[in-house]
Length: 171
Image 1 (cartoon, rainbow, N blue to C red):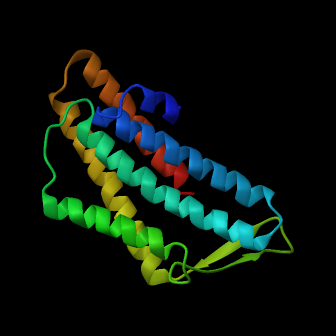
Image 2 (image 1 turned 60 degrees about the vertical axis):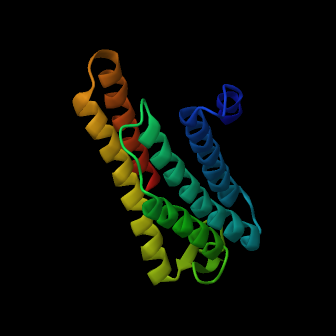
């Protein structure tokens, strides 16, 4: 789906960020499938980390998508933009180190596994994710209050879908 959205034009920021959102949802889902189907603990650990990396892509894409959909109502200043991207870059690097996941081990000989996280970094990651997700929903709620007709209905269903997705994905 993301490739189809990209063919509709990357100059349109809504298409760009929605395409990235669907791409990172795909990589997150693929990572989950691979962690459940592989029998090599090193690969399971790698794909488990990759799902966390995809989570960063999901929340950043969601943030910028909601900023622009269906129209851009407010601007994000350069300091906030720099912080968002700097933290995304930092977490993207840390995810593949022992500073994020200390180890991944089989439970009862497999196929279930557990990853042990370095708590301070994982808590910072979770806070980053929740703040951007809540900020995204707040953009849509502000637009929903001012919208009328079809746009209001679209925003209502989008907000509901995002909230359900965030709750279901938080397992």
